[in-house]
Amino acid sequence: MKRAFPSNVSDVEAFFVSELSTIERVIAFVCARHHLSVADAGDFSSHVKLKLIEDDYKILKKFRGRSSLRAYLSVVVQRLFLDYRINAWGRWRPSAEAKRAGAVAVLLEQLMRRDGHPFEEACELLQTNHRVALSRAELEELAGRLPGRGRRMFEGDSALESLPAAARSVDDVAEDRGRQFVADRIVVTVETVIARLSPQDALILAMRFEDGRPIAEIATLLHLDQQALYPRVQRLLRELRRGLEEAGIDAETALRSVESPAVSLTWKLR
Image 1: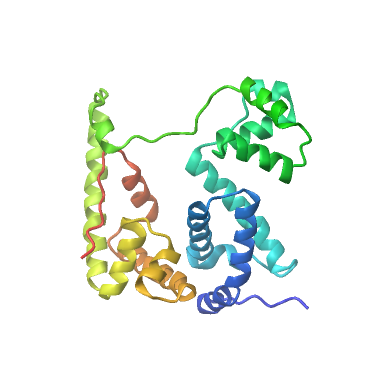
Image 2: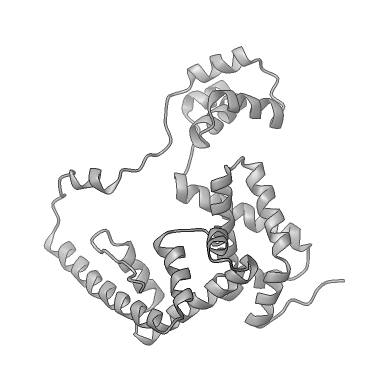
């Protein structure tokens, strides 16, 4: 029998909490399928759960019971993983040499260049998960033909400080000043909203968005129930969103401001 899906936010929130074990099993399956490390799997798990509760559980509200919840979530989580991987590593494409060498070469390059597995580990994955029959010597010869592209590296602030500034037009400078003005309003608004929160709620937001800690880690450090923490974070975000709207700042404007390279937006959580 098809399940009648809840229509209001509180009921959807209860549905999310009741089905969290199913959600976590699907996430674990996708993480295992893509051979994520423990740290990356934890980060991706938090990413998925926050996506599921974004916009008042918009993704979950689309489930209508025409398939099992697990089947629906499998499609959703896989799509979220593809977006997550592109955002984290950039869109990956096999080299021309790998394409010329065939499907095994593309798989080997994917494991080594995109996913960062060392050669020995990539060989094991090819033989175990993909049933590749080539010997280790043949795979080593194949790896030697691939171009030596590394994974994307990110420089720290100290390295960026030594780079020369690019010439910028007066219009660009004026536009960034306007964005900085909006960003300053966002900072003031965020501080005003946070001042009304309890110390623990403010700490949760600081740990999540200042420190970038996953929800599971915050729950452990603060001795909180992890299942209840996800909807709690969502409620706090709704309060911040309402505060921004009351100040006349829409989400699109806020996003443009914080993404501007000339704007330094820091949440001063007290």
